[in-house]
Amino acid sequence: MITITQNALKLLRQYLDQDGSSPGLRLLISGDIPGAYQPSFIMMEGEASEEDTLIRHGDLSIYIDPESASKAYELKIDVLRTVYGPRIKFEFPCPHWDNPVADRLQKLIDGRINPGLISHGGYISLLGVKDGIAEIYMGGGCHGCGLSSRTLTEVIEVLVKQEIPQIHTVIDRTDHATGANPYYPATSGPNPGTNAKPLERTQLPENMSPSARRRARRKKK
Image 1 (tube, rainbow, N blue to C red):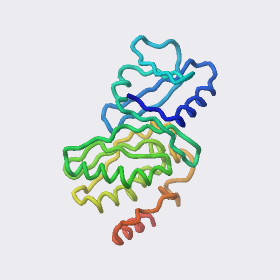
Image 2: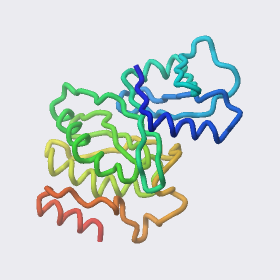
Image 3: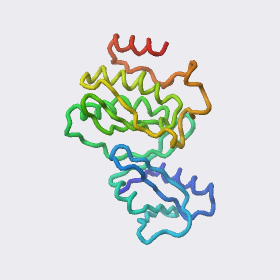
Image 4: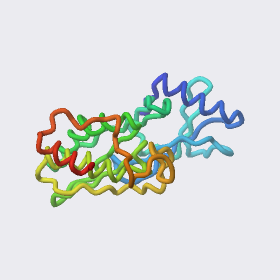
C-alpha cells in the first residue's frame, strides 16, 4: 500500500499542470537493494500498459509498472521543505538488520545523520556492513552533490567511527553522475576544492566528544 499525503498530492498536481497535456504521472523505482531504491516521478507518455497499477486521487492519476510496484510496499510519499522550495520525499520502511553492528548504524542514520542531512534535501541509506566496512547510498540532494565526498569523510564517517568503533571505513556506492537534483551541482556552485563547506547549515552533532570535534575541525582546515 502506498500512502500519499495531501501536501504531496498538491505538489504532484502542480508538476502535472506544468505539462498540461500528460494524462498522469508515472512512478519509477530503480535499484535492486532495499534501502537504496531510487524513486522518481516522470510525466506519463503514451498509453498505459495493462500490467500497470493505477492509483487515482481525484483528477490525479499515477501509473506504476509491475517491477516498481513490487518495491513500493508501505511506501510513503510526502513533501520535504528545502532552501530551494518543496520537493517530493519518498519514505520506504526502515530495514531491520540481523547484524547487530549494522542495526546500530541504522539507528544512528535514522536518529542523527539523516536529520542533519535533511536541510540539504538529502539522506543516506545503509546497504550493509561487513568486516568493519559500511557501504551506503546517498540520495536526494546528496545524490550528485559536488560536496558529497566531503560530507562523507568530514561528517558522516567521523560520527560513525566515534559512535561505532567496530566500523573503520564508510564507502559511498552512489553513482553520482546520475544525480538529478543535487544540492551543489558538481559543475557549478561552490568549488569543493576551495572554501566550500559541506553541511554548512548543519553543525556537528552536539553530543560528539571533544576529541571527535577536534578531529573534524582539523580536517576542515
